[in-house]
Length: 222
Image 1 (cartoon, one colour):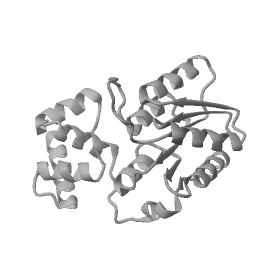
Image 2: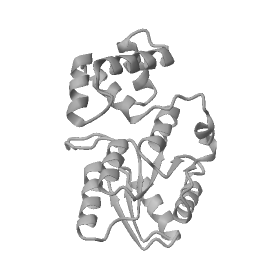
Image 3: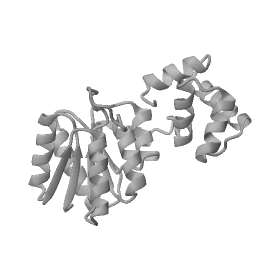
Image 4: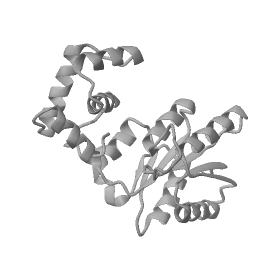
C-alpha cells in the first residue's frame, strides 16, 4: 500500500472522511492541505527532502477567500505537481461531471483515477486507491465509466485548452501566435491556430469566438 499520501481538500468534513478511509487501508503517513499552493509546497518540500509523496488525492474546486493563491483549481495544481513529480499517482475526488473536463484530466493531466463524490464515493475511493497501487489501470466511478468509452466526444488536447484560455482573455490571433512561440507550443503559426479555432467552432456549433468561449466555460474546459 502507499506509504505517503497528500489530500488536497478545502472542506474539513470531507478531508476527515478521506483520511479515515486511507487509515483503514493502512496508509502510514497522511498529509492534508486546504489550499492548492500549500499542497504544491508540501510536494516540493518532500521532493527536496528526498521523501516524496506516493499519491495525491485532490478536489477540483477550492473556495476562494481573502488569500491570494498561485493555483486556484485542482487542474492547475495537478498540472504543476506533474511537472515537478511526473510519476506521482493521482486521484481526483470531485462532484464535477462534465465529460470534456473529466476526459481532459485523463488525457492531458495524466490522472490515474476519477472518483465522483456521492453516496458510494468512499468505498469507490478506497477501491481506486487499491487498484492504482496494484496496476496502471485507469479508474473512474461506475456511473461515469461511459465517458472513457464514448468516441463521439472530441479529444480535447492541452493545445486546445491553452488556445481557449487565451481567447477568453481577449487575445487576438497574432497575439496567440506570439504567446505560443514564447512558451514553445506548436503549431504556433497564425494560419494553424486559425484553422484549429474554426475546427472547434464547427464541432461545438459556435457562431463566433465569443460563443465558443461561452460553450467552453459551460463545459468546464476553461
